[in-house]
Amino acid sequence: MISDTLLPMFAALADETRWSILAALGEGDASASALAGRLPVSRQAIAKHLAVLQEVGLVEPVRVGREVRFRVVGAELSATAAKLDAIGRDWDRRLAAIKEIAEGL
Amino acid sequence: MISDTLLPMFAALADETRWSILAALGEGDASASALAGRLPVSRQAIAKHLAVLQEVGLVEPVRVGREVRFRVVGAELSATAAKLDAIGRDWDRRLAAIKEIAEGL
DNA sequence: ATGATGTGCAACTCTGGAGTTGCAGTCGGT
DNA sequence: ACCGACTGCAACTCCAGAGTTGCACATCAT
Image (cartoon, rainbow over the protein chains, first blue to last red):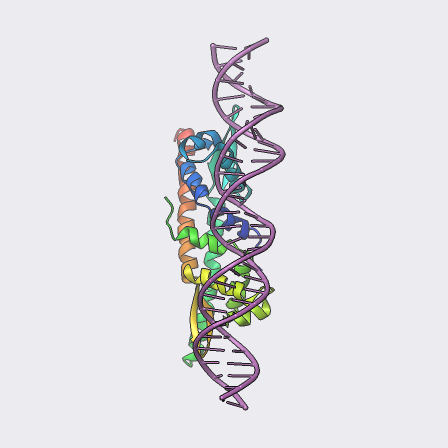
């Protein structure tokens, strides 16, 4: 029964356009309109992506006057990484245990 | 420009049924038919999911007589975790650097 | 040899989500 | 006050993928 924060996180990360947005934001905060200038998609599409990213905590809105700039946040990504690593190690640990039994240790 | 192995990996992980399969396999190797007995989906659906999981290296087929059992593999998951953590730390490092400049250090 | 079980392939339906356009509202600058 | 730029909401199209059914093939046991 997988943590229910993981699934939306992976869904958010399973889109190339969103990675483009994250990459762009990685070089500096930007608004949806600014991003629409750099990427080959409409502003509204980007706004939707930003909403998805914000929902899972990968991005954070910062009001600057009348525009809304977004900033990437690494915390959730690192937290997700920790969970993934734990699961992966868990699987391999089971395999190692079985292997030891099979080898008569 | 995100690594092109990450996107398929996240796509694979962004499905609840596949996590159910992975969880089931986490308790022991099993064939598609065996999994179809435990999960509320057809064998063919499970076979497709297993193909996706195998494609990204999360699962490994093992022929046992006429049946094909699948085994979970943690290596790719841990490798993905490492990449995610690196990216997350990179983002936060940039933020920390900006903050230091803003504080005049 | 034959029936039963397990696998593989193909065609089909259907829903979610990515992207679009259009319009209304809001705020800053001159 | 007015104009331009930025945001937000809604309705629409379109396609990838999750799931199904049906059938053909392979393999083990009796």
